[in-house]
Each structure stands twice: as C-alpha cells, then as structure tokens.
Image (cartoon, rainbow, N blue to C red):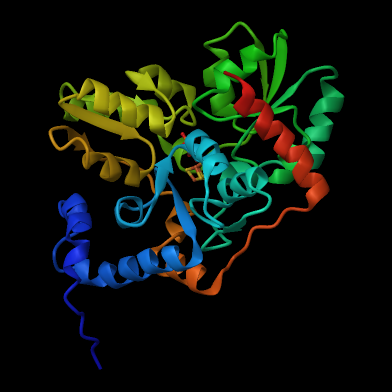
Length: 329
Ligand code: 13P
Ligand code: SF4
C-alpha cells in the first residue's frame, strides 16, 4: 500500500523558499508534515529549538529558533525564555544547555548523538593529568561530558580558545581533549599548551594533500578550515575558525569560490544567505549530528523525551567551568 503525500499548507511556502535550492519540490511534501507538526508542538509545549550549524537544512532553516556554533548555543541557552529546550545537536551541547538552565526541561531527540572528542576522555583522565602537571590549570573544550567539565577549571570553544587560555595569566595550561585544536591554538600564543590525544572523527580525516588537490582542481578557491582539523590542514588553509567564524567569513568576504574543511551540512546551510558564492563540496559527515532528524524532533516534543538530567552536585561544578568561560570578555 502506498501512502499519499498531501500538498503542504501554503503557510509553509516562505520556509520552502529558503531551502528550495537544496530540497527538490518532490521531497518537500515528505518534510512538510513534520515541520508543520513541530511548529504546532513548539507552541503547545512552550518550547524552542536550538540547532547547531551542522544540522541538515530542513532542521536548520525550517524548525530551529536559534542557530549557531557551540559558543553561541551556550550563550543563547542562557537567554531562553521558554519552558522546554530541544537541542538539535549532540549530547554535550544538550548537557551544556541543561547546565545553564537547571530549571528547564532540556530534550535531545536521540540519546546516541555523541561525539568522538567527548568519548576520548574521562574524569579519571583529567585527575591523572592534574597529578602529572601540578599547579597547571585545566582548560576543557566544551565537546566533553559534564563529568569532565566538573573536573576542569574553565571551558573553551573553538571560537574563544586562545582568549580563554590567555585570560588565565599563566605560562602553561592543560588543554583537553582535542589534540589538534590544542596544537593549532599553541601556534597563536606564548602560553605552553599541554594536549590530550583526542580527535574529532570528522575533521581528522582531512589532509594537507586534500587542500592541495582542491586548489589544483578549483583555481582561486578560498579554503576555510575548522581548528579541529590537523595543523597541517590549518597551515595550508586561508583562514581557520569555528563554524560561526567560517559562516561570518563567507558573509563578509563573499569569496567567489570557497571550500569549507568541515562537516557537510555547513555549506548547505550558509548557501542560503550567500547565493552568489560557489561552494566546492568535499566534506565529511558527522554521524552523531546526523542522528537528529525531523521525525525524532517531532517525537521528542510529542513524548517529551529524551530528557537530559545531570546530578546536581556534579552539575554545580560543571556549570562553574562553563560560567567562567562565559564571563571572559
Ligand atoms: P563549533 O563550536 O565551531 O560549532 O564546533 C563544534 C563542533 O562539534 C565541531 O566539530
Ligand atoms: Fe564531535 Fe566531530 Fe561530530 Fe563535532 S563533528 S560533534 S567534534 S564528532
């Protein structure tokens, strides 16, 4: 038996206009019922959707209320007025939202949306690093569990890592868990940076040879890299920055041709505001980010699951690390 797809309601037309170059007309009736249901459920539940830059365009452009990089999502999470936050992103982002909003209900549509960096380190590992390097502050990337944040002095994101490290006024820091981010930041500062051997499974796959062959195949292309890429990639790139920094670069500089050495959905999402820019698209998918879909966002709101909870004493310590980061101007 085949299901009949209804014509999407006209009130969704402005949303479709944003993504029509990414979603063919035949596919829109597949997405539209979930989008309409999510819009209704957000009103009924007093909910907002925070979506990371790596979410697919139908989520990013059609149901999200707030979008951005990890830093922006953490900052915006503090300003949310609604009772319920749905985090369209990975688990550590939902935990950060919960840390900053202990009284709100924070939902993640799929509990399996993890992160290879968050998986690479445990609280015990942080304690061992402290014992090995006494009197050295621990700066922890937000891509970690609340339990790891609780063992740390301060958090950072890829957008503010250098500023955070230098704000401490010390000659040496431990920076966990992304080895490449730590090495990339170490090149920009006099502070000695002791790294951990965690990697992002998406960004570690890019190589300097990839950059060179992209330049050879696409003359004049501007190469933007996320600082989770290996240092050899960042060294060959024209610019490195967080996902929001890369989006801002494209909006500001309007390069004729650009390639983003990062997750695939980034380019899709920023084509919307930059139709004149040609995006060359070698990219790597983040399987964790891709676990979030319109149907499971809808189900999260219908069934109020999966609620993110953090043990209060641990949450207080983890929150202090995030708040110290947010206090650095
Ligand atoms: P941003 O903070 O740059 O958005 O990065 C988050 C992330 O998970 C990158 O892989
Ligand atoms: Fe983690 Fe990498 Fe996926 Fe970002 S892209 S969530 S760092 S695995």
